[in-house]
Length: 83
Image (cartoon, rainbow, N blue to C red):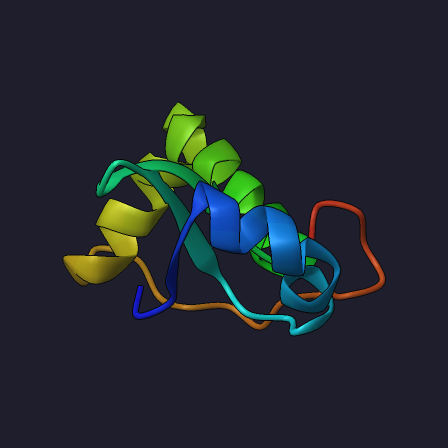
């Protein structure tokens, strides 16, 4: 992340930083201590972690990558995407 601010800088500009829609790091004595990111990025990260923690999903991903299964179109109207 290219945007790093000291605690003092972040405190003085927090509203502006939050409205910027960018990820940024807050450092204390030149050591990163906090990462701030837009809620969309956070939700995508949590969703990715959910997939990675699901053994069935990971098994399906590995099978697809190795060519053991074919890709199927997803059904976006289905809660489980037709899987």
